[in-house]
Image (tube, rainbow, N blue to C red):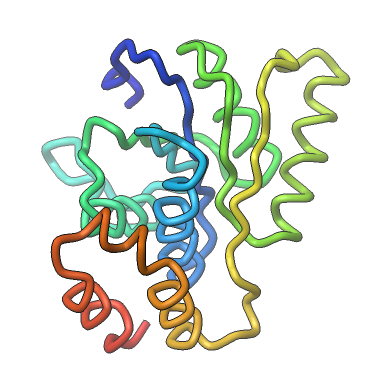
Length: 186
């Protein structure tokens, strides 16, 4: 489902690999908040397992739909969201995403994940380049998610209070977003 790419002057993207309910939300939020400092209007590539498909050919639930819902809640337009359904592990995440980037001329790729996962993604990319599976033309930019051992509620508070300027730019009512994400159980 990458047919929604249009020609832009700024061909940047953010890869958000799936990783479980808590990680999916944090990776999506990190992608939006931290990319605002680096990228101007990037694409968001959701890379990983897809949920159940309904009779209209749309995903009903699963890791990809959780991330997509979070992105849409954060006011990311659907035409900026690209679903990559084929990958099932870190190696295939970066392989499939690299192929999308290669096809559409994307030169800078932000990676929204935990620091240890970003290291594995970079290593996997270097191995794919070394063996000629993908071109070595992507600049990989880490967008590190806060460490996992911090409770989700504390992570979300950290995001909203330390990224207040970016939150205001992205939302008309940051308190509503805070209420929706901080005061919910995951």
